[in-house]
Every structure is written in C-alpha cells, then in structure tokens.
Length: 291
Image (cartoon, rainbow, N blue to C red; front, side):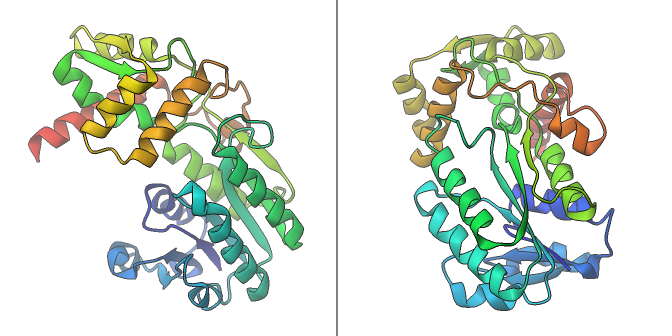
C-alpha cells in the first residue's frame, strides 16, 4: 500500500488524486489528524487513517501494511523535526520500505531559515536505513496567484522582493512528481531539485495580470516591515507572514531561482506556465465573487 501524510492538505489531496492514475483506490492510504474532514477521500475508496504527529501512538497503527510513504513536511517550522522524527521512527518500525519526503529547494545550501529543519529531516531519513527519495520542492506559484483578485480590485500587486526571481511551480506539478516517484522504479536514493521551467519577478507577474485583465496593475515594492503589516492586517498568521517576508528577501539573492529541470523531467511535460497560472488565479477571483 501507498500512504500520504497530510492527506487533508492542499498538496496531500493533489498527490492522492494523482496516485489514483497508478493504483486502485484501496491501495492508497490517506493519513490525517482528522478523518472526519476527509469523507470525500473515503468516498473515492481511499483508506483514511488517523495519524497525528503529536500522538505517536496513532502512527504505528496508521502505517500498518504500508510499503511506500510520502512524508509531506509539517507546517510549523519549530515543531517540524520532532514531528517528522516521530513519523520516520514509526515507519521504520512498521516495515515501510520506501520513504519519499517533500523537502525544500537546495535544502543543503539554502540560506532560508526553513532549510534547517529540512536538512535535519533528510539526514534523519538517511540514517533510518529505509530506502528514500527526496523531493526538494521550490516555491509554490499559488503563493502568488491565489490572491490576484486583490490586485485586480486595488490596481496594485504588493511584495517586497524587488527584482528577485521565482522559479515557481504549481501544487499539481509537485504532486504529480511525488506520485511518479511513488509508483515507478528508479528513484531510490535520488534527490530531486524541483522548480518551474519559467521564472518571473513580481513586476513580470503584474505585467502579465495587466495584459490578461485589460486593467493596469502596478507592482508596488514595499519594505519588509510594511509588507508584514499589510499581511497581518488581513489576518495572515504571523508565522506565514514571516515566511513570505523572508522568501521575498532571499529571492533577491537568488534563493528562489533555479534552472534545474528535474520537475519537468519527472512529470514528462513542461510545468504550468506563468501565463496559465495567472489565468487560473483570475478565474479563482471570479469564483470567489460568485460565492
């Protein structure tokens, strides 16, 4: 059986949907803290099991019979390593033969503060003795496109990244890569640097949005402090705001850029274009307006 942690999350759900192209539903296990919120997965025939990183007693039972496991990184950076270690230990005890892990782009050298827990997790997986595949995911393009409706409303796209470039890809592309390594041979011991085929700066994104909407959208580059205040004012959790601010700052040093083509090679096609990502973001705006 194939198991995916964080099955209720945005990435986890996408991975499970992609796995359905390779395996019958009864061979797929969705691991989640709250099975009551995964009834749609159960309706597809997916086995949904409780697996709480903070309740180690749930993990061993949840991994019973699992041969391959995708560990999707936990959300809270300060708790990440401890929680990951609990899952890795349980997987080892349960006899999991392959663990794939969603790490961070160039985790071994990245100056982003988030990289430390990813490096430590990668090391712990390697020390476990299990076969592994490391998926070092780059920036998610949805981080920039899911809120484009606000830029359309106000005529301005906000950020603090200057001319920093993002080689971002969609959750769907990252999910498909994970499904590929879990379902095909030849990926054991591999570390993949995953990034979008195209890169862009925020001014490029504003220009594309202007082009597609027919409305002039300017990019306003704020200081880190001012952008954080804006994010907090619209109820973005401070932890998330800090991640965004740091990513913007480090993008100016090239930390979010990559010309590696591992992702498109794994999925056998080009990654989602910036053009289509903006189109998708605009469509989300109209869907929200209809709700």
